[in-house]
Image (tube, rainbow over all chains, first blue to last red; front, side):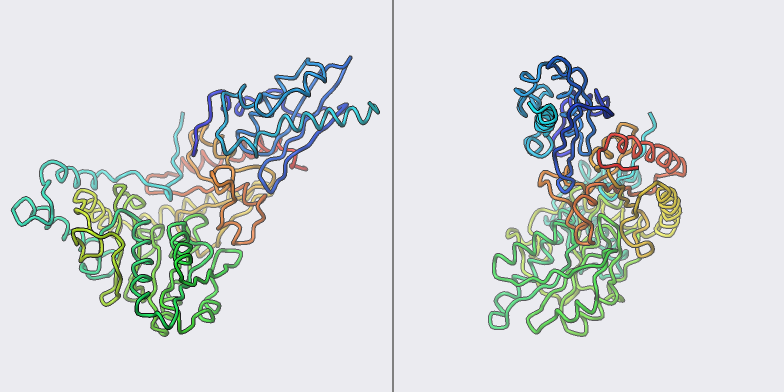
Length: 126
Length: 389
């Protein structure tokens, strides 16, 4: 590895939390581009304005997989408003930092989450 | 946990025989080979023995071997040395170098640098296997062309270029021919005379020698300028106190490489072919590089819908050391220029893995990889939103 990953990145990469899909998801968000090497889909289930369940699927490097995993952990049970406040920096910080060159391409989870919430709102005509 | 090293194209462990040969040159025979006293002569003699060992592997003459710090320096000296030497002479004629799109960065970046200083460089395209077209090469030659540099065997996908045909063409046109043979030596018999090679780069640590030492073969009569000025060692081409232990190690590694080539090549070819056959059975897997014109130690695959860095790390978790051409593993975040040159799309290049075999690999190692790798591919695919099966 050019730059070493933190232990936390490797833990989430090896044991991803909330991996998979939700068949009857209330909102789905996909971001990324296979050309760049990272694509991420986040599925959410919403109840009483809170994220009741969340799952993800990610194609990409360890940073992409770990950032998806930790983001789902951070927002599970949170209100949509709270979840929308999650930023790329929050995700990276929670992971104990990411190599600089991974910050933009692989750290897409906050964007995917936002897209999933927008999808949910659109479906609900909110 | 079982540990399997399959990254021999990246570097090799030093052979015990080589190591034993080197050790006395750190503390017992520590003289400077340029000194005239007995201490210097001991080092000088050892270096001249190594020169002979290196030249034997290539069927060159000992005086045609210049010791360097490794493959990268050899490539730089060979290409820039010839280029700078031609700059003065050819002011009216122009300066044209021909290379390929699949060279190692040591060649490619050197050529790009020369472009900035006024040279013209033609980068030959390759087919889907990574082979250059010798007709395209011959068509590219003009009266301005003074150097062709095309690698012997590809460092990533293992494709062996048509070196004999290139040598015939350059000889016919009176142009110098340099080849980066860092990956090929010890695996392909190389006779620089028969192949009409004028300059050839090798590195020690790819053939079970120490790191930090290499050589450039310069055919007698081929003229170059130095790129490092100083005390004038190595006929003025490579100033710097000679690295006696390293050079002794390179010499021994070449001697052993020659002695063991047949046995080594037959052993790793057998293992390689089993591995290729087994990995081909994975759904939507593809062998990169040429099926036959291929270095004996190279296995290079890509798998749909997964990314190489993740694959590489999960293999490492199982004790398997491999390498990937995925952009995500490079700081430049660009897919490998070699994989793009053979026509892969960036998303295809990302899903690639290189396994390179060596003298110490066994059938057990192959069986272990054949068991573990498909499981990891499967695991990553279940995680991937791009996997549609």
